[in-house]
Image 1 (tube, rainbow, N blue to C red):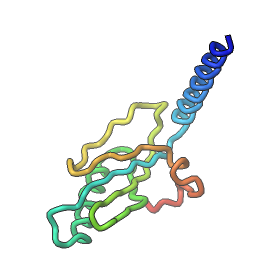
Image 2: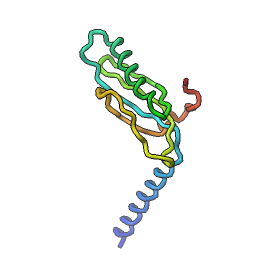
Image 3: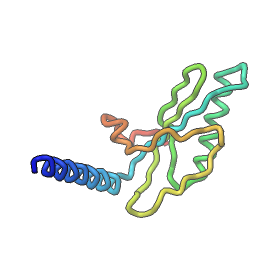
Image 4: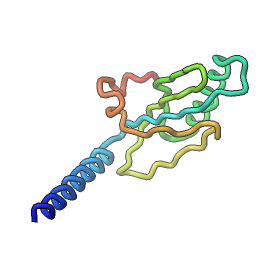
Length: 125
């Protein structure tokens, strides 16, 4: 009997956590997406990174979401970029804009879950 109650409570807890996550997502309009790539085939790493950033930024600017580069990380071999943007999941599905194939989408999360102490409105436009 105790095992059945424990299983029921576990399932109930999982359901409540799921419902909270869905509610948070539906009420979030400020998002961050992270892209990553390996920088290869160039003897000038900084210049290659600059070119890759420009290509991705230009591709994302074509969308209706207002992508803005928020953070970049260059580690000598790879490059990762975080873009902040506005999307309301309650209004429509996310239509991902096309972007260069060398990039991999690593993360999509609410802005406040990644930057809890930052203000979305302070992002340079």
